[in-house]
Length: 236
Image (cartoon, rainbow, N blue to C red; front, side):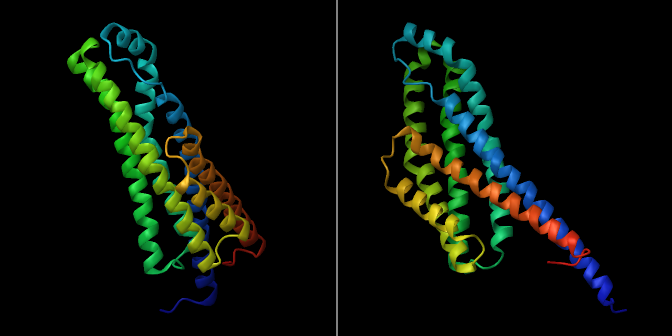
Protein backbone atom coordinates (compact mmCIF):
# COMPACT_ATOMS: atom_id res chain seq x y z
CA UNK A 1 0.00 0.00 0.00
CA UNK A 2 1.43 3.32 -1.09
CA UNK A 3 1.85 5.94 1.62
CA UNK A 4 -0.10 9.14 1.20
CA UNK A 5 1.43 12.62 0.97
CA UNK A 6 0.76 13.33 4.64
CA UNK A 7 2.49 10.12 5.73
CA UNK A 8 5.48 10.84 3.49
CA UNK A 9 5.67 14.35 4.87
CA UNK A 10 5.57 13.09 8.46
CA UNK A 11 8.30 10.53 7.72
CA UNK A 12 10.48 13.17 6.09
CA UNK A 13 9.96 15.44 9.07
CA UNK A 14 11.00 12.70 11.50
CA UNK A 15 14.11 11.93 9.45
CA UNK A 16 14.96 15.64 9.32
CA UNK A 17 14.48 15.99 13.08
CA UNK A 18 16.70 12.99 13.81
CA UNK A 19 19.41 14.30 11.49
CA UNK A 20 19.19 17.72 13.11
CA UNK A 21 19.55 16.28 16.61
CA UNK A 22 22.51 14.15 15.52
CA UNK A 23 24.19 17.19 13.99
CA UNK A 24 23.65 19.16 17.20
CA UNK A 25 25.07 16.34 19.31
CA UNK A 26 28.07 15.94 17.03
CA UNK A 27 28.58 19.71 17.05
CA UNK A 28 28.72 19.55 20.84
CA UNK A 29 31.32 16.80 20.42
CA UNK A 30 33.39 19.29 18.43
CA UNK A 31 33.27 21.75 21.31
CA UNK A 32 34.22 18.90 23.65
CA UNK A 33 37.14 18.07 21.37
CA UNK A 34 38.42 21.65 21.51
CA UNK A 35 38.21 21.72 25.31
CA UNK A 36 39.73 18.26 25.82
CA UNK A 37 42.54 18.90 23.34
CA UNK A 38 43.46 22.19 25.01
CA UNK A 39 43.37 20.68 28.50
CA UNK A 40 45.39 17.60 27.54
CA UNK A 41 47.92 19.75 25.67
CA UNK A 42 48.36 21.96 28.74
CA UNK A 43 48.73 18.95 31.03
CA UNK A 44 51.28 17.18 28.83
CA UNK A 45 53.34 20.34 28.30
CA UNK A 46 55.62 19.74 31.27
CA UNK A 47 59.01 20.79 29.93
CA UNK A 48 62.12 18.77 29.18
CA UNK A 49 62.71 16.04 31.78
CA UNK A 50 66.24 15.92 33.22
CA UNK A 51 68.30 12.84 32.42
CA UNK A 52 70.11 12.68 35.75
CA UNK A 53 68.46 10.17 38.08
CA UNK A 54 67.90 12.24 41.23
CA UNK A 55 66.82 15.34 39.28
CA UNK A 56 64.42 13.22 37.25
CA UNK A 57 62.93 11.81 40.44
CA UNK A 58 62.09 15.35 41.56
CA UNK A 59 60.70 16.19 38.10
CA UNK A 60 58.60 13.03 38.14
CA UNK A 61 57.17 13.75 41.60
CA UNK A 62 56.15 17.20 40.38
CA UNK A 63 54.62 16.16 37.05
CA UNK A 64 53.33 12.63 37.53
CA UNK A 65 49.69 13.56 38.09
CA UNK A 66 49.70 15.97 35.13
CA UNK A 67 51.13 13.37 32.78
CA UNK A 68 48.69 10.73 33.98
CA UNK A 69 45.67 13.00 33.51
CA UNK A 70 46.83 14.32 30.14
CA UNK A 71 47.50 10.84 28.78
CA UNK A 72 44.12 9.63 30.05
CA UNK A 73 42.30 12.39 28.14
CA UNK A 74 43.92 11.74 24.75
CA UNK A 75 41.60 8.86 23.64
CA UNK A 76 38.57 11.02 24.39
CA UNK A 77 40.08 13.80 22.27
CA UNK A 78 40.11 11.41 19.30
CA UNK A 79 36.63 10.07 19.97
CA UNK A 80 35.15 13.57 20.19
CA UNK A 81 36.87 14.55 16.94
CA UNK A 82 35.41 11.56 15.10
CA UNK A 83 31.92 12.69 16.11
CA UNK A 84 32.75 16.20 14.94
CA UNK A 85 33.79 14.82 11.56
CA UNK A 86 30.39 13.13 11.34
CA UNK A 87 28.72 16.50 11.99
CA UNK A 88 30.68 18.14 9.18
CA UNK A 89 29.77 15.35 6.76
CA UNK A 90 26.12 15.66 7.78
CA UNK A 91 26.31 19.36 6.88
CA UNK A 92 28.06 19.04 3.53
CA UNK A 93 26.13 15.93 2.50
CA UNK A 94 27.40 14.32 -0.70
CA UNK A 95 28.66 17.55 -2.20
CA UNK A 96 32.30 16.72 -1.63
CA UNK A 97 32.66 14.18 -4.45
CA UNK A 98 35.00 11.20 -4.44
CA UNK A 99 38.18 13.25 -4.75
CA UNK A 100 37.57 15.59 -1.84
CA UNK A 101 35.88 12.93 0.29
CA UNK A 102 39.08 10.86 0.11
CA UNK A 103 41.22 13.79 1.26
CA UNK A 104 38.64 14.72 3.89
CA UNK A 105 38.47 11.30 5.53
CA UNK A 106 42.19 10.59 5.13
CA UNK A 107 43.27 13.82 6.83
CA UNK A 108 40.72 13.30 9.63
CA UNK A 109 41.81 9.71 10.30
CA UNK A 110 45.51 10.54 10.10
CA UNK A 111 44.98 13.36 12.57
CA UNK A 112 43.32 10.97 15.03
CA UNK A 113 46.05 8.36 14.54
CA UNK A 114 48.87 10.84 15.16
CA UNK A 115 47.09 12.22 18.22
CA UNK A 116 46.77 8.68 19.60
CA UNK A 117 50.43 7.94 18.92
CA UNK A 118 51.37 11.23 20.56
CA UNK A 119 49.38 10.18 23.61
CA UNK A 120 51.10 6.79 23.54
CA UNK A 121 54.48 8.57 23.59
CA UNK A 122 53.39 10.42 26.70
CA UNK A 123 52.08 7.22 28.22
CA UNK A 124 55.43 5.55 27.57
CA UNK A 125 56.89 7.65 30.38
CA UNK A 126 54.35 6.21 32.79
CA UNK A 127 55.04 2.67 31.59
CA UNK A 128 58.83 3.19 31.79
CA UNK A 129 58.67 4.39 35.38
CA UNK A 130 56.38 1.51 36.27
CA UNK A 131 58.67 -1.14 34.76
CA UNK A 132 62.15 0.36 35.22
CA UNK A 133 61.78 2.50 38.30
CA UNK A 134 62.06 6.27 38.61
CA UNK A 135 65.82 6.64 38.39
CA UNK A 136 66.27 4.35 35.38
CA UNK A 137 63.43 5.87 33.33
CA UNK A 138 65.00 9.32 32.83
CA UNK A 139 66.38 8.71 29.34
CA UNK A 140 63.18 7.01 28.20
CA UNK A 141 61.21 10.02 29.41
CA UNK A 142 63.42 12.45 27.48
CA UNK A 143 63.06 10.40 24.29
CA UNK A 144 59.29 9.98 24.74
CA UNK A 145 58.81 13.72 25.14
CA UNK A 146 60.88 14.44 22.03
CA UNK A 147 58.92 11.84 20.07
CA UNK A 148 55.60 13.23 21.30
CA UNK A 149 56.51 16.78 20.28
CA UNK A 150 57.72 15.63 16.86
CA UNK A 151 54.48 13.74 16.27
CA UNK A 152 52.22 16.54 17.48
CA UNK A 153 53.84 19.48 15.73
CA UNK A 154 55.34 17.73 12.73
CA UNK A 155 52.37 15.55 11.82
CA UNK A 156 49.13 16.07 13.80
CA UNK A 157 49.20 19.86 13.38
CA UNK A 158 49.84 19.50 9.63
CA UNK A 159 46.97 17.03 9.27
CA UNK A 160 44.75 19.49 11.10
CA UNK A 161 45.79 22.15 8.59
CA UNK A 162 44.99 19.80 5.72
CA UNK A 163 41.57 19.10 7.23
CA UNK A 164 40.79 22.83 7.46
CA UNK A 165 41.79 23.36 3.84
CA UNK A 166 39.72 20.47 2.50
CA UNK A 167 36.66 21.58 4.50
CA UNK A 168 37.06 25.03 2.95
CA UNK A 169 37.28 23.47 -0.53
CA UNK A 170 34.25 21.24 0.00
CA UNK A 171 32.26 24.06 1.57
CA UNK A 172 32.94 26.28 -1.43
CA UNK A 173 32.12 23.53 -3.94
CA UNK A 174 28.94 22.37 -2.20
CA UNK A 175 27.87 25.88 -1.10
CA UNK A 176 27.26 24.37 2.35
CA UNK A 177 28.97 26.92 4.59
CA UNK A 178 29.12 30.73 4.58
CA UNK A 179 31.87 32.61 2.79
CA UNK A 180 33.44 33.88 6.01
CA UNK A 181 34.00 30.31 7.17
CA UNK A 182 35.60 29.35 3.86
CA UNK A 183 38.00 32.31 4.09
CA UNK A 184 38.76 31.65 7.76
CA UNK A 185 39.41 27.95 7.17
CA UNK A 186 41.66 28.67 4.19
CA UNK A 187 43.67 31.34 6.01
CA UNK A 188 44.16 29.28 9.17
CA UNK A 189 44.94 26.15 7.18
CA UNK A 190 47.67 27.86 5.15
CA UNK A 191 49.20 29.57 8.19
CA UNK A 192 49.21 26.35 10.21
CA UNK A 193 50.67 24.36 7.33
CA UNK A 194 53.69 26.63 6.84
CA UNK A 195 54.21 27.90 10.40
CA UNK A 196 57.17 26.96 12.57
CA UNK A 197 56.53 23.37 13.60
CA UNK A 198 57.60 23.76 17.23
CA UNK A 199 55.89 27.08 18.01
CA UNK A 200 53.58 25.87 20.78
CA UNK A 201 50.57 28.19 20.19
CA UNK A 202 50.17 26.85 16.64
CA UNK A 203 48.89 23.58 18.11
CA UNK A 204 45.84 25.40 19.49
CA UNK A 205 44.75 26.92 16.17
CA UNK A 206 43.04 23.74 15.01
CA UNK A 207 40.95 23.10 18.16
CA UNK A 208 39.92 26.77 18.15
CA UNK A 209 38.77 26.41 14.54
CA UNK A 210 36.87 23.22 15.41
CA UNK A 211 35.09 25.08 18.21
CA UNK A 212 34.02 27.86 15.80
CA UNK A 213 32.75 25.38 13.20
CA UNK A 214 30.95 23.36 15.88
CA UNK A 215 29.13 26.42 17.18
CA UNK A 216 28.09 27.25 13.62
CA UNK A 217 26.77 23.70 13.11
CA UNK A 218 24.83 23.81 16.37
CA UNK A 219 23.32 27.19 15.50
CA UNK A 220 22.39 26.04 11.97
CA UNK A 221 20.85 22.82 13.32
CA UNK A 222 18.76 24.67 15.90
CA UNK A 223 17.61 27.16 13.25
CA UNK A 224 16.55 24.30 11.01
CA UNK A 225 14.54 22.69 13.80
CA UNK A 226 12.79 25.98 14.56
CA UNK A 227 12.01 26.48 10.88
CA UNK A 228 10.63 22.94 10.63
CA UNK A 229 8.41 23.52 13.67
CA UNK A 230 7.15 26.81 12.23
CA UNK A 231 6.24 25.04 9.01
CA UNK A 232 4.07 22.60 10.91
CA UNK A 233 6.50 19.72 10.79
CA UNK A 234 7.13 19.84 7.07
CA UNK A 235 10.64 18.90 5.95
CA UNK A 236 12.94 21.80 5.18
